[in-house]
Image (cartoon, rainbow, N blue to C red; front, side, top):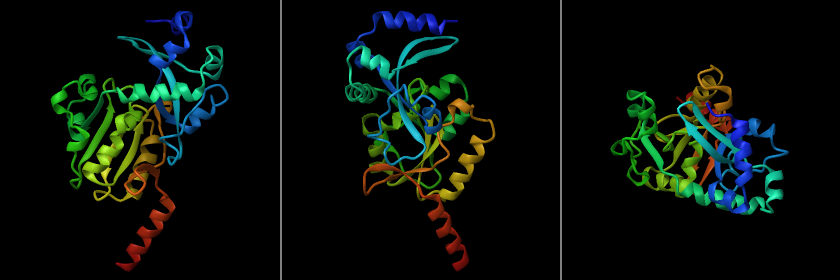
Length: 246
């Protein structure tokens, strides 16, 4: 198994501003997790400014083997040392993200093939292009990257979130973990139900603490072409009013 400290030292030896720009990637993580490192690691909210509870964090992939993956965070100190601005670094990171291979599959397909290969979606014939998605009632889709590692951010790659909206209309984004998100048409389910499920799963131990993304529920709003946070207090009030009318 690789030694992360040894790997990091070797990486720093060959590091440069250009190396960072060519290799930097970004991931979504919980705002709570980011807060602990907020003084040393920069963030960027150009895509997530309407999303509560999450933060965009830059990192550089270092190594991958059978035992796992290694990566190092891009810190403010590192940027200062190589005379690279946070803006230029994040501009490069979003360009790198746009090159990512986004994988979208029906959740039922993923569940039926619960092997690493199945989750990663290496069977390209089982993946769906964003523009081919449907808003059929009950259809739930799994969105990640090719490696299924830190893949929740991939919904922003190459405007995938907008392409999904153009194909299936407004949809909810369920923050399954830092590695993936689930999406479902707004016509399929009540947001309050989704919110209860998200909080229940996050509190159950099913998702490792460091992989929990958010307790919020998000929605693609076609009016602003952005992913926004649902105001669950308002949603629950409307639901109660509808129940009383019935």
